Length: 295
Ligand code: A3P
Image (tube, rainbow, N blue to C red):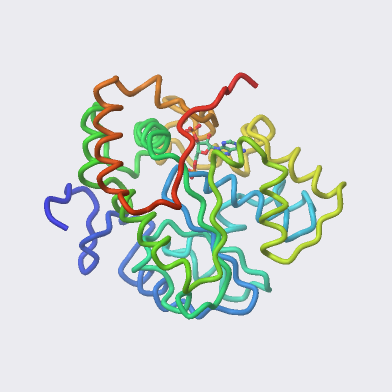
C-alpha cells in the first residue's frame, strides 16, 4: 500500500501499522503459524468494534455463566490478542476451549483458519461509529499515534489507515473468505438492539445450551452499564503512561450513532460516498447507522 503514515510500521509487514512495544516480527509470525487445536475460538474485530464486549460474552458463554473469571482476570488474559508478544505465554498450555482475540487483517491471521479449523466470530460495527470511538481512544491511548484534529483522523480512516489496517480491507478480507471458515458474523448494532438474542446465537454457534438463568446472568453482566465500572475490562488497570485516564475513558458511551456528534454534514456525505464506492458488491453487509439510544 502506498503513502502509509509513518508511526509504527514493522519491517517485513508493510501493510500493517502496529505499536512496536506489544508486537514484533516474531509475534506476527507466531500468529500466522498458530497451530489451531480443537475447540479454539477466534474473536476477530477491527479495533473499536466491540472486542472487549465479545471477550466478556465468550468468557461467560464458555464457562456456563460463571462470573468468577470476569471478576478476577483482565480481558487481555482471558481472551488474549494472538498478534501480541504475550500470546504464546497465555495460550500455549491453556485447556480447551481456548479463546483468542485478533485485530489482524485476514492475510496475517492463522493460515489454518482457511482450512476450516477453529471457530471464528467476526464482529463488525458501523464504520462511522468505529471512526468516532477510535478518534477518542487515540487521544488517550499513548501507544497509538496522536490522532491530530478530527479532520486528519477522518482522512486517514477513510483514505489511508490507522492502527492495524484500513477498515475496508479488514472487513472485506475476512468476509471474502468466510466460506472457507466456520464463521459467525455478528454486528455491534445487533448486540445493542438484542443482546439476549445474540448471546444465544453465539452460544448455539459454539455448541453451548444455556438455560434461562445462565442466559440472564450473562446478559445482565454484559450490558454497558454493568461492564463500564469493571476494572477487568475498563483498562483502569493499565498505567497512565499507556492510557491517560485523565483525558478519556475506554468505556466511553457504548452507543450507536454517536458519530453524529463529531462528523460534519460534509464529512458524513464524503464518508457515504467513499463507503458506497469501496463496498460496492458487498451486499451482505448492511449497517445500522443510528438508533434511538435513549435507554
Ligand atoms: P465507544 O467508544 O463508542 O463508547 P473495542 O473493545 O473493540 O475497543 O471497542 C470499544 C467500544 O465498545 C467502545 O465504544 C466501548 O464503549 C464499547 N463497548 C464496550 N463494552 C460495551 C458494552 N457492554 N455495550 C456496548 N458497548 C460497549
